Image (cartoon, rainbow over all chains, first blue to last red):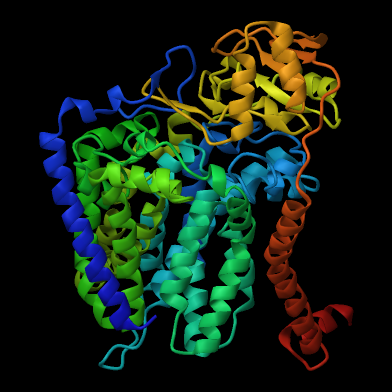
Length: 54
Length: 578
């Protein structure tokens, strides 16, 4: 793959990653409780779960 | 030091990590469900109603376990994956080294190779995905370094290395691993030689043809619940905030599969240790590696890291992709492609170990270098012995064989009850696994593909599973049975030991063995597969198989050509014949 192309893609991806990090940090600190996953979907306590994020 | 040492060291690491998993029985952990004899069925070929999450891996296992028993095959796959991964990382670290500006070859030696193998095998990505049962992803991870080396050779020499035609399909046993393998092949294989680049693109398309074609046939259902992106996003791990957890190849969404050592200071120490060794080797690596190879490794690291960050930082955006763009659900488990980030540190620590060995003379230098290369093991010790027993091998209760016989073969399909996805059977020491009943019997089956995470239900995508759920919600057992028969269901198999809603379905009991109850609902209307689907999937499988068959034929032809001309292979045989 041409080096300039990889450099270009890397810069783009790096920039996107940096921006995403910033947005994520801000969101995590300022997001309202309404955005919490706890308010999404149906609650099921009667079956084996796939996993836990807590 | 001998060049086979990294192979030996990788084997030691693999045995240490797998431990009891190599004993008699089956390792059953979350999505990793192996059975004694997996029957090949239409669903495994990609013509079922569910998204092709296990295409082509299930079909490959079903075919190979006709020759090799399932239990042995699982051991071979797990052990071979880790050994191949470690040896591949060592080969990549050593293979990328070129001639330095001053004309000296910057040999890494076996020490550098072992350091690369350790970093590539003993890390959170491997351990956590292993416990979560993502073995096809790990097979793909294992072939990444080899694909990088072979694609690079194709790029530089313009001649197709035959092993690549085998490794590309092997690295594409699932959608996630196929994408990772393709990215590595493109990063190292693309060049200005148009013919080689087109050839590589065609080879990649062929290697991924089964799941790509099946995915295209399921476009209507290839959209996931956007809420799942939040639940499946990578996140902080113990003391490491998400960005650092990703940098250490951890941060998986499911905290249940995270080793305890990753939740404390050891994880920080492990990251620091790897960073120090990588930092020590960075300059040496930069000077001894070609520009294209450097760019390839850095580019892959950036892509893997950026995807993990994206899922964590912008889950809504990923959720939108999963919900609106068919196939966008591939990104919802945002650390799935973090394996792309493992190549660069593995190569850097190889150089770091060599730098330490060169700068500190004599035995102290060797001791220091070996100590540093063992940092990943020392800081995640509980990954050893089957992740501290979590990968223990168990035997199926005898009732599974009896159930298999009772269900038999036939045109009608099977529904698994309770209609829930995961089980925690006592005979698996209470460890979670995907309901094994479906794979243990021979018919096509419908399992619930809705997932429960944090007590929240993530709806599945399979329209037939949804229809079955609706049928089970009908008010009377007779109505349920009738609707299920219309959906092509002839039998139900209920696991009485599993948790989940008790729903009665009218039918004739066929067998009751242990905790398993088989009930016949009567003759069903068999589900038909559109002819177009069969033809298209047939072509996709042909495309997947042809390169492998072509490589085998070409290798045989080369051997035959070489034999009479005094090639080492030919003279070897002649020597024995004489």
